[in-house]
Amino acid sequence: MNSPARIPIESVSERAVPMDGIDEAIVAFHQAYQVVIAGADERLAELGLGRSHHKVLYFAARHPRCSVSDVREFIGVSRQALQRPLNDLHKHGLIETLVSPSNRRVHQLLLTVEGAALEFEVTQLMRKRFEHAFESVPAASRKHWSAVMRAFVA
Image: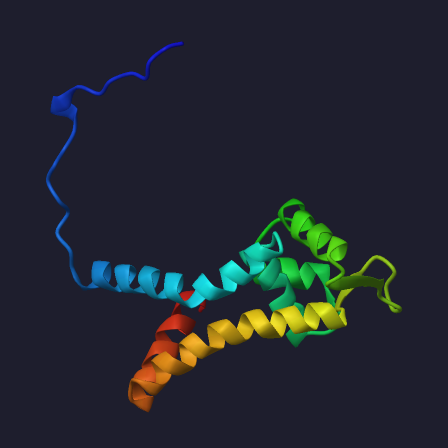
């Protein structure tokens, strides 16, 4: 077995990159995201599910009979990448796929009663984190935060 190639010590740097306001925002965003999803991810993991499964459930709960293409666009993944979460959700009895009456090539998603209950439970865990954070800052701060988040996807 070959050992990994060693990088000469003169080729590495121990100099830290200075932090600025953008770096601080990146760190704050990462830390906040970890806190927001922690409880939700733990609940999903109990069922052998993950973040992508919740994204499908979340979108389908808010857009009944949405097309698989709409879900794929919302999540931002390829058809192949979406196939596993869809199969898992079907296997767990959390979603049903229907053929659109107006176009037989379009497959639509509906949550089962169990799927709707799980989506509500997991999303509530995240909503509570947001509610707590929003209650601790002025309304103007919430509007600014929302504006920044929308600017990322504009």
